Image (cartoon, rainbow, N blue to C red; front, side, top):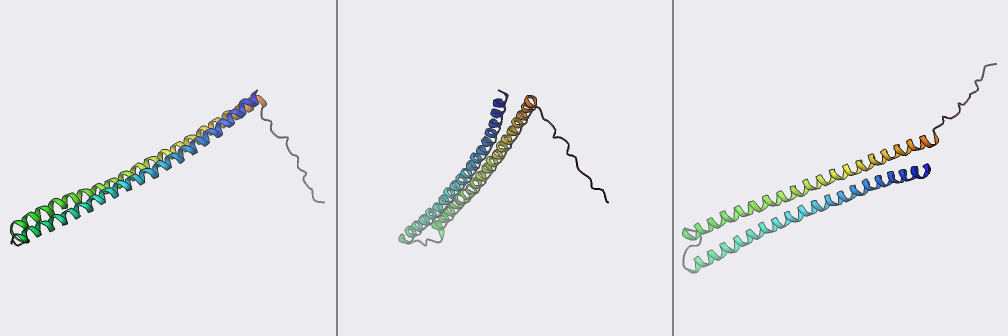
Length: 161
């Protein structure tokens, strides 16, 4: 009966080690997903910033065309003031979107590092649990069967003739 209990304890130790290893792999996968999610969000912000520049270009082109069609110099006076205001607003939006893209990348990286740390902890916990169970199995073995030291080995010493 003791042998069965010891075998179960050893199997439990192996299971604890495997659980730690599996948890680490899962956290590493989550870390990769967090990195990719951060990159995806950053790309979306960069695309929106580029869209802002395209809209600015289209708005300013339409403003210049209307002014020219109305016989007004599109690059001075009121049209120029409107263009400058458009440039300022678009510049602010563009800068904000690029800052958001950077924040998304950093956030994904930070989250990935947290997951990697959690994975390392889970792995170490699995190893320590396994070690504890192996020590327990060793104690049960010692109580049940006892450890016997090997018989001393006698060595022959050659004497010079």
